[in-house]
Image 1 (tube, rainbow, N blue to C red):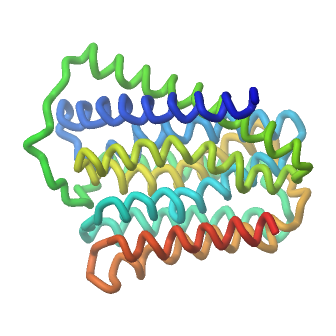
Image 2 (cartoon, rainbow, N blue to C red):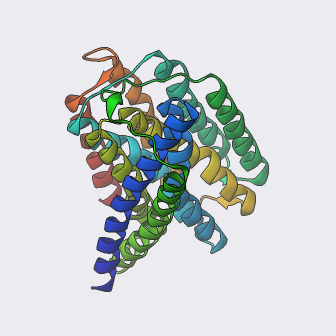
Image 3 (cartoon, helix red, strand yellow):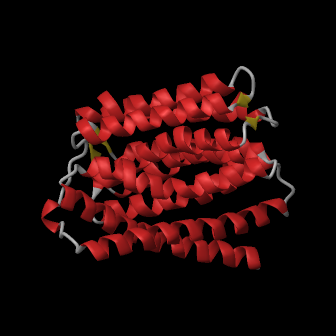
Length: 312
């Protein structure tokens, strides 16, 4: 019963946190005259990736490397399969050229880099972690200097600037609520999963990863409802880049990671690469530069299939 209450309270905090974070992100983009896609890929992505960072570092330090890796790999699959799928079922997203010239290629590059670092020896060391964090820094510098709006904002007239104190307050409340909500959700989910006798990898790749992806789901669904689709798409792409380069990079620097359950290398990592690659053709077919409800059904179907084969 306690675990169930943790899950419920965690979800409520995450939904509230997603709303507060979105308010602050839109206000920052207006006040600084920065494209919303950039804010989505930096401020929102960093705040919603914080749970993954906290969980992965703690898991690695506590001697549960499969939980740290499964958390990130599973979160990336959930972000695109579950979160993006649900988001575009609720409302289609129109994208522009910079999506496939910059954002998606960087996400794929980060995914392939992680694959190359860990697949052949099953280890992610400090030097590899430093390389990953350095690449993230270079990407953010490029993003803030050159990136243009990559998604059409349907209702710009609804954007109302907030006073600085409100912007800071919403940003702080959103970050704290997302972190606290994720902690409660993860503790409850792991408690429920452990009672079923499931392995660390399976707990990480399913229960924990979904728990830490709920902030992205909350922020993205709220963004679509409020017609802030630049925040929605940028948040998901940015979160996957952050998860790989920042979360795993920083975790490897703090405590090098060694794969214990080989299922992560023989199964999970290929699902992550596959769903990441799939986003590009879905953007172009059947309608060019758009993700619609049919694409959402495909993505959710892929995620459900992944979970089924993982838990089977």
